[in-house]
Amino acid sequence: MPLYKTPFSRAYWRTAAQELKNPRMLVFAALMIALRVALKPVGFYLGPGMRINTAFVINALGAMTFGPVVAMLAAAVSDTIGCFLFPTGPYFFPFIFVEITGSLIFALFLYRTKVTPTRVILSRFCIDFFVNILLNAPIMALYYHLLLGKSYAMFQMPHIIKNLCMFPVESFFLTLFLALMLPILYRSHLIADNGEALRFNRRHAAVIVALFLAAAACVVGYFFYDYNTANHAPRMEHRSDVMAAYNEGLTDAARQQGVLTDDQVLIMNKVYKHFHGDTTILFNVYDTTPETDLSRIRQGVQAKMVKDDPTLTKIATGQAILREDDPHRVSDLTITPLSGK
Image (cartoon, rainbow, N blue to C red):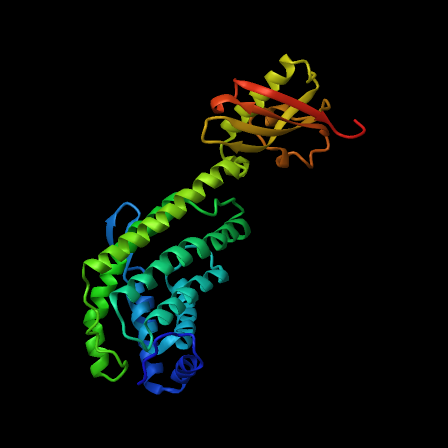
């Protein structure tokens, strides 16, 4: 069995494809699929939101043994079977790509090579950061939008913190598990590496710490950027009390300035918050009619929620600054009439 220094060669992929013709590998793959499905609901509870799902070690073991081609097929089969046997919500096909990508990464780092703790650590890091955080986020947002009819903040801090914190634990646990299994698979002539290089030392612990700190720095940097530049209004759809306070404060300020009449309403459209304390509000101004449901507006709505209301006529846009995010401390309020109004 040849070993390869890198997966980026024709020989590597030719060998991986040939595993589809190997009866022993196909039987082993079927065993890994069964174990992976059976262990899907099994895990070790370490604390609130902290749980090691044991199925990932089977995923790594299988991908290391039969390579990326079989691993991707096995991931698709195990994910589909697992979703129907242990459902956690409506079935959503795109989640299969999360499982396939995770299996592919394990195979690229561990198949037909000298398995070292560094390779195991890097494989787990790529899955926790690039798959569980980056790839999973847009799929979750699509799932919530299409199947649940809800909005979903793509990058949620609790989910990210969980994956970052679990990465060192899972890396160490996986290294120990593979160190036990490699000699067994080697004697069974399923792999070409006997696992002699899988010895964890201080240098590998330093690699884990360095990767953890690099990922944490990326996350912190992103959230600073996102907090200052993202529109926070969609995240407030279920906080009608907050939206009502914004609309009321802006309306009072506009009427005090004499730029809003009693038969007009002001409804926020976009919200931009800043770490220095101020909040920028973009809003629309509407003419009302006697049929307008003002009570609904007082309960807190966004401009997108009333755009199809035939009793409202949009006549202007505007913006204002809320000092320290206080709806009753409004400054720099300006209104710009629409063209022709």
